[in-house]
Image (tube, rainbow, N blue to C red):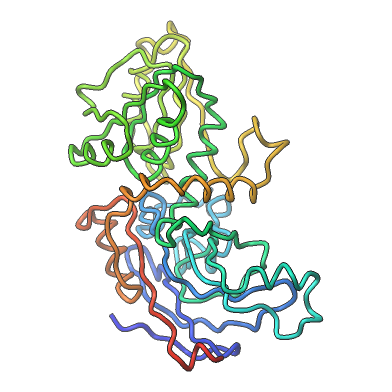
Length: 354
């Protein structure tokens, strides 16, 4: 598919991926403003598709009651469409305001220009955002791996919610992006026994690279101190409850959208005093809310990505121009992936001098 672009007022060309209507996407031109006071222009290098949430948005599965809650930081449009949605973007800061008098702290901006940064921005070739919205990527974290920062941030917040202890037995049900990131973080806590459960036997290789045990749902080991559920299915949530030891907790990170969830609570749920808790990245976990900001949490997630084990989650790449077809293939299951990344075209010599 050919991208449609236009020359923006800033002198840069830009284009963005939009969900035109449920199940339909296209590439649209974007008019970029000049960077204003405290703003930077970022040229995208890679973005990642957060498969669970983004395919739900693509098929129009966000319930009306959650349209406002589900808004991404730099979303344009509204659900079910047209909407510009996404939040895993890595790029290079090209410049700030043309007028130095517009800046409160010119030194800070000079430090950002030329740096690779992460931003919670939709899939777009370039964008202008407040400098406070970008977080520098550590020099020893590859740009493509850095697209996982938002997912690792979700996993980090989940561990702050769960509070696992040394020596705990924890199972993660669902070996998608979030589940794999949770499993890897848990595996780095001393003597925590981690099992990753999924219906896809092909995820066993990923589990091995993450340093955790893999189990099928039928062979999953029970009497767990805690279970983290990320499969976004009723059967996965039921299995999570069934695997708990008495007084155990299921931490549910799944987003079900407009799908109903039915559970059998007539077994050990009451006698075992089991618990189901929700975790969601929009708010910092109560255990750290008084001592960490959203920026602190995201910066920590990027530092955690120094770990090369996360490369196991990067399972495919496509050019930006193919994103409408890629999203349709991911939503239908024709394209299996954990994190499918998007590569952006390099600027032309003329663009570089703008």
